[in-house]
Image (cartoon, helix red, strand yellow):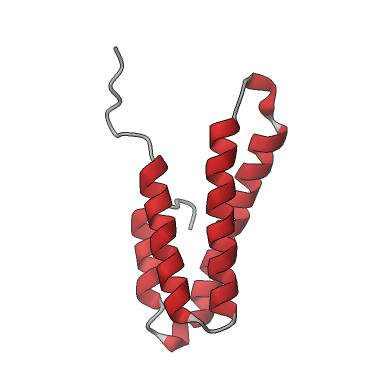
Length: 104
């Protein structure tokens, strides 16, 4: 998975009900976490082009939710993992760019 969006998160949530796919879900969440941690690192240490403060706080929130999701999955708490993935979806939706920006 290279694109992290609402559809990809929903696909992961659907796999939660299938016990046989639990490790696959854990691996996918771990990969999402790695991607977001890398983006966070780049935002924190690559501020030569101005302030990235809002991006950093957004990515920090996403990383925290994914870390908690991974912990819930590894401990077998599927209900909490589903809740956290829904929270993650909300964070993605809240911070996404509009498809047609209103430039003036």
